[in-house]
Image 1 (cartoon, rainbow, N blue to C red):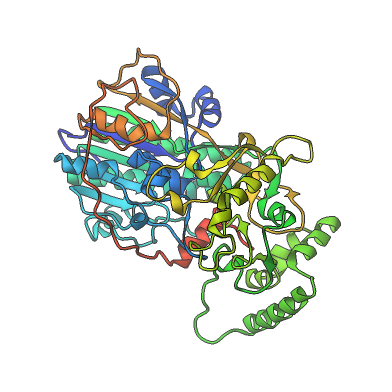
Image 2: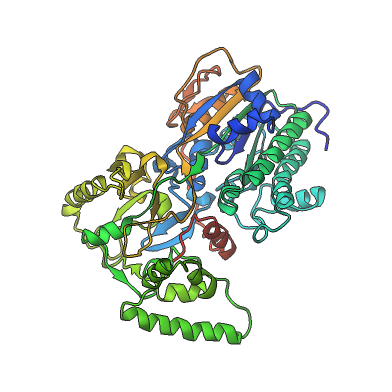
Length: 542
């Protein structure tokens, strides 16, 4: 698809989820990524430090707002109200994205596949959201996704089912949709700014861990789509960024709630009121009359619940199967809903502190006056938090190495009006080589549930007439991306941003912008979205 005869695209921001130097440099050396490599050889590039937590749903809002989660309000894939939860969406984000700031200066934007952007606020341009959106999401303008699907022959937010023998074609087709959709919209709206994000570079590590050939195939297609977009749209300046890195988990799985139980903070239950009400994946509801199999599962579930009251939980069954080398039996034979019936869970109302969601990287105190059934008086808050920090700081792996590189009060990482929504204590795994879990298995350590884990450092690279390739720079942070992008477009950046323009651009001055008009929180409440996130390990299954 050809671009406009004379493109107005001044700055293109390309997001490659989980891209990092340890992943791309071997592909550069083998000649797999000529377009991306040119950014490092002809432009400027290096490492980009992510935030805490370095996960997609929180990191991309931090990148596109330039602010920490305490200001924009998204700390993970889940948002909590008391002990209830929902998957986050754009109504959870209380700050402007760069395209909304550009709109205030009369500039047009096209945004494709950026996570946590549904439902979008109106602005001059077009937006098709990415992860955490519904499969048929709200877009801007309304109905634009139908136009895109008609024009390019289909477009999906999430892939269909598991990868099969045509995995390469499946993955590359999914990547190709992003590039084709962006080029179609750029041709239609002739924007000043474009933001094109590729998610498959992250999900492939979760879907097919260890399949280096498939990783290469995904990255090659990303490289082709970037090249075709540069040819079609001819942007003056291009910046490539990632939200975090990724690599093998070389350490152990550490089950934080097991430590908290041993320390007397966590109480447990086998009733449905515990953790599975908001951590476990909710099954698709059966339509019509229940099948004989589903009725049998219901009976089996009841039996497992009875057995659980006598201590025969799924965790104990799992430990027995591990000893016999039959770990896969639970997953393959016993359905998810039956597993959950016999799963020991955190009892939030009775506990004093707990890890509610591993992605948040921390511990929440069950505080009186804040939580619906708080058990810790406000007068004891700091003493309890100090005791928890001391207990977590002392944890070592079976090999004697510290589990955490930092255990700190949340205020050391988050500042802003939403800080109270965060966990009370931040737990940063050492080198991000320890996999944190909120699950209960009567043992604090086990083999990692996921073989790959997000790492703290991603990458950034840039080239174009506004980029000074001679200046030396280091220490780039995720929060620096938004003010850097705005500077390439001669637009002032928000003085409340936590980053600043990087040295390779001519920095504009910060200014004060009016507060964002608050929006009513809309529930995502979509089982397909939840299933996809659970399949990728972002929502833990019981």
